[in-house]
Image (cartoon, rainbow, N blue to C red):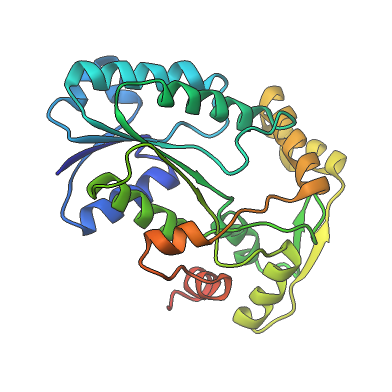
Length: 263
């Protein structure tokens, strides 16, 4: 099959591209350079994976533009990469994905919507830095369905290539609900040194690491951290296990691979 991946240059798009190629698909990467002739890029494709840029300011029209180009190109199947807890009004970028989901659902395609939780890999750069702290601007003991990016990519490839997924919305969480404190504990075991989870004051984040961001992005992330501080981001793991044949990657397995280069 010939599959277009819109957003192929990002970490999610790259992972999906790798997984598709491993299953023998012909992958057509679509990025900003291809955007002016989007329908031409999608011509001859059997399906399209849509991964919008992170924190896109207005995702529904972007998704609508891809769908229009896909329809013009004669594409039959679309898989849209959304987010866990999409309809969460306190998080503007999540709400943008909820509205984009509506655009997809009202389309004429054989569509599937994927709602992955936050990736374990999002915390890996801080763990690789060698500091004794894993610091985040929200409660380190709130529950998350942290998921392995490679698992999400593998599930995405399966949904794109296999039949039986039209009209489905799949929430994709890791095998267990875990906290940032759990991540620090697991990382300590993998690295052989103590790693302590610590909550950073969100104001300090906004004037420190967040200061380099655009004001809108900083505001949206601050809102997300506030939501995480109150609720975490729980997401169930049963659906992902089913899509992957009964097993998904544990937190310890992901950290071992990402931090030591071994399985």
